[in-house]
Image (cartoon, rainbow, N blue to C red; front, side, top):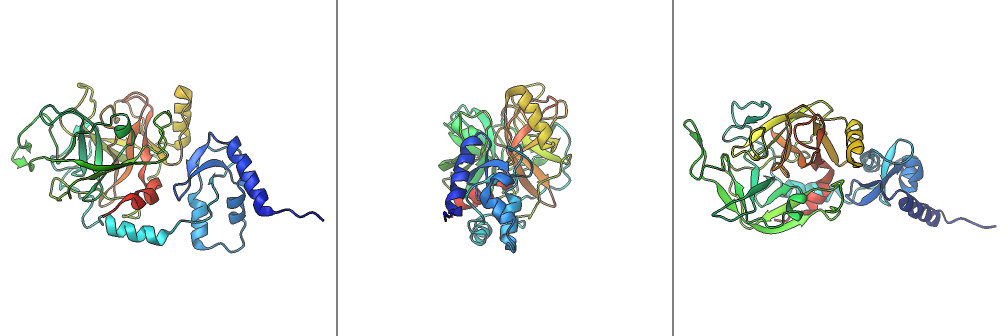
Length: 361
């Protein structure tokens, strides 16, 4: 009697599946590249779902493996050979050690409010970093980023790969045209701080040639430790505050020095409220325009006329306020600016494992 080696069969089936569905790429909860397909055609996760007594971690892993815009019938999962987290206990310990808690991160200046397309308060969003692609004497400001601890800034990968020559990073900036001390009335900021890059970590699955801009995320380690002040401090990571993804329709905030209605760039830091968009509707809008596939690690926000992130805002934060400010997304790309089409942001929580494992003291 012939017997079938189920493990070999599963591997063969999985190999065939990934060759067929190679354009439906995704990242699983361990940030390993997989393919977004129906769970019925993913042997390892199908078996996990049918397991009589899965552990709580296995159940959570299966839940976190769900992806969108896959191939076949729903539910879709990001299919790899993984059936559990790499080591959540280690990642949690590293996160606690290397990322600031809510007693330090995400401070809200007193009395500030969010208005669409308005200038920020002078001390608002003190984690924002502005990249200088020029010289000290003649700065050319472009992308932005966010301080996440005393040595690291998070930004979009394309801000580094497409424009690799960052001279310095400016912290505590408000008005780029003012070479002195920034003031609003009698409220004055500290002098700006220019910091320099020690090393850069670009997500290994970012592909500059891909129009989809999947995995558009990078970390910059600065040479010297950042000293926190009222005008320079870190934003909270969403898992530090134990936040769930924001629901569709909720207004989040994006800020930066990018294009405005009047100028190619704003000299003064601006902010605007943008609503979280429905993933499928956003996917359809971009598919009609330029055959772009969105993955679960991307989030859409915006779609209100003339209220949007724009050129020069790339790499900056999409933020949610839950008693403290947390970074939910990173400005990645859009189809025009201020049109009734949402912008696309890299979902930071989707990269928790990669971020935490990339940090060092």
